[in-house]
Image (cartoon, rainbow, N blue to C red):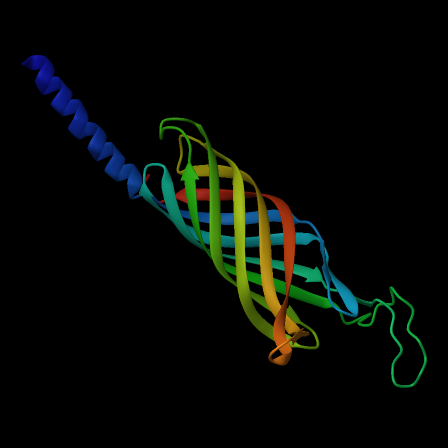
Amino acid sequence: MKKYHLLVAVFFFSLAMSAQSAQSFLLNLYGGYTFSDRVDFDSSYGKVEDGFEYGLGLEYFIMDNASVELKYNRLDTSMPLYTKGTIPNNGNPIPPGTQVNAGDDKGAINYILADYTYYFGSSSQKALPFLGAGLGVAILETPKSGSGTYFAWEIKGGVKVKTNSPLSINLHAYLQSMSAAVGYDYYWDYYWGPVAVTDYASTFQFGLGASLSYDFSK
């Protein structure tokens, strides 16, 4: 009977500990290096150059090993646009590889994402591997076109290193993507004739980063 009481006590104690851990609320400060990517269009191609990405997030643990997070990250970068070779109306050909926005290519990408993250292992471990993914929007800032809002997503993976204090460090790699409509492609249909289909361009940028987390529940 004493063993039974002991098991019941341990069970309810573990539930209490899990509930406390599951309700953890964290503030995350992000910093990372995002690598460049090339985006092809019909008659030109552009680049989103590499740069430092920074931001912050609010993370809430819905259970011991899983959390949801709302975060904002910003990448200040250059976005040069190059022609693939064309002949304008004046008849003077533009050689392939000519930058058409030289001196006016500074911009930024602002990511607003809702992430889900799963941590592997027990809450007592000092190092917890994790995988996560997020969906949201990217606000693209360009000198000539102003700003636009587009669909964005990311996947990530890394390890969370905890300390005895409320502070912890996340080391992670991530892949971010933004998709935007850039015009139309036309196809010939046997019954309907020419059909316009929206053409999309997407960025795929890999990065390495870290975040400093503060746990308000400790």
